[in-house]
Image 1 (cartoon, one colour):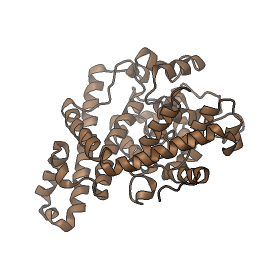
Image 2 (cartoon, rainbow, N blue to C red):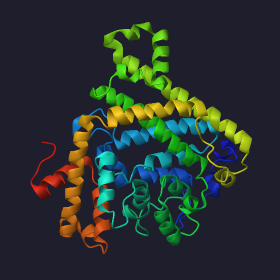
Image 3 (cartoon, helix red, strand yellow):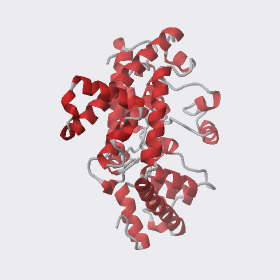
Image 4 (spheres, rainbow, N blue to C red):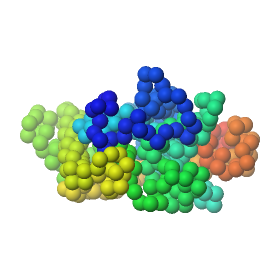
Amino acid sequence: MNAAELAPYACDPAHSRGRRFAELAAPTRSDFQRDRDRIVHSTAFRRLVYKTQVFLNHEGDLFRTRLTHSLEVAQLGRSIARALGLNEDLVEAIALAHDLGHTPFGHAGQDTLNECMAQHGGFEHNLQSLRVVDHLEERYPAFDGLNLTFETREGVLKHCSLKNAEGIEAQEPGGVARRFLNRTQPSLEAQLCNLADAIAYNAHDIDDGVRSGLITMAQLQSVELFERYRVQALAEHPDLAQPQRARRLLYETIRRMLSEQVYDVIATTRENLQREAPINADEARLAGPLVAFSAEMKAFAIPLKQFLFSQLYRHPQVMETTGHAQNVVFDLYKAYVQAPGEMPQDYAHRADTHRAVADYIAGMTDRFASREHERLTGRKWPA
């Protein structure tokens, strides 16, 4: 999408707030395209293929990983952005980078690392994603990190505690954390990525949950957002009721559910933009959340989230593996703090040992963390 096709409220790379370290423009790519390319070529991005969400790396080859999730968010985000005249390249860059700071073992790893770091600044995966692109990637001779544009970095920092926002603001006055202090919104492209993230993980957790056998289609019939589109699919394709076509019925139901959510976001956001009529990207930031579900779709989405939380995320089998994963992260943290030399030199020699340990563990894949745990403790997991 070139500048002439962008809506006035979209982020235009020609008017970017720039990079932390000035660089000459690329001859064939916009700044947001360049951000996307840097993210794709980063070490942290490649690691996402072995970082999982609900199901851990050893539990199956077909379950979503952080990488496939990020690609799905990018695909949904670009589709919606094109319909709204937003900057697709910026949406893609944010979507591909938004999970770079996630720990191994999904939210279990993140929560455990946050507990370990409670007396040392805590751990937030969104803040860690920003640390990855600002500091931890080592690819360029003149600066640490990837030196992304303000707009991409703003979208990467999806959430941030007040304390951490104040710390970032002190180092970068008027920068990516200012909005958490003055209660304004990020760009429309960043708002879109937040919503595409939620749409994607609800859909693929249904798919992975049914594939795993931990939840069933029969259970999902109690969720109106799912059942509405299952009934539609069967009405148009009665043969999908046959047991041997159950997988196709699931896919068709999820496809319809995804499509309707996307259309709802597009229609609702258009109404919001028409009402607020922002004349540029900065004015859109001041208008409150504009990229949104309708009240009806939002109400339908809540029971689905509640169902997934109670029936999948808190399933006894998931909780058992979660407990093991938490023990791995805790043991790794304790071992590295006690013996920093067990880490690579560039981590072992840092002045802040606790933050170095958190950075090192957060960058691990599921399988590397498991191998390191076995090396340091003599205990193998998974057995």
